[in-house]
Image (cartoon, rainbow, N blue to C red; front, top):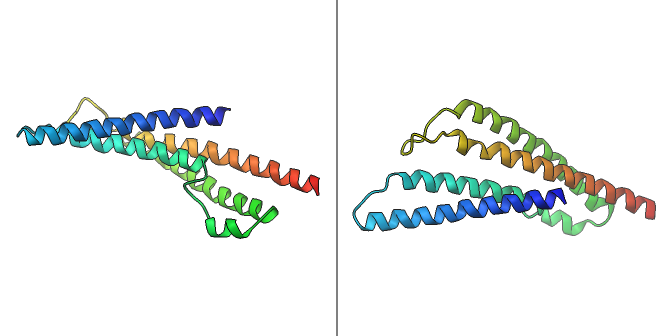
Length: 159
């Protein structure tokens, strides 16, 4: 239940930033066509796209559509498949913990840097997307591990 709510929130955030990206690009094209240069559009589009991609990557990981050993998964059944999921999720857990930790370090280092075209905005607002993505990936991966272990135990009990 919590996982589905978290995924839905991330999807909404990702879609909102994707819409902001699209609108900003349209504004950029229209203003350049009119001979006026809206300098801020490039940064807003770039940072909106970063947020959209990072939120989407986390959701894709939760749905197991992002990282996948598809060829091996098709060959294994039962315990072999569960074991492969556990190995994959263990590697992902280490990787996502590193993303979260180093993402947080980046936020702390770059928080007070300002945007070039909109100096009233801090770069920390952009960088915070990294530990948010990493943290939610940790939650999703941990939930996958717990679910796989439960299924693994239930299959053993059934046999």
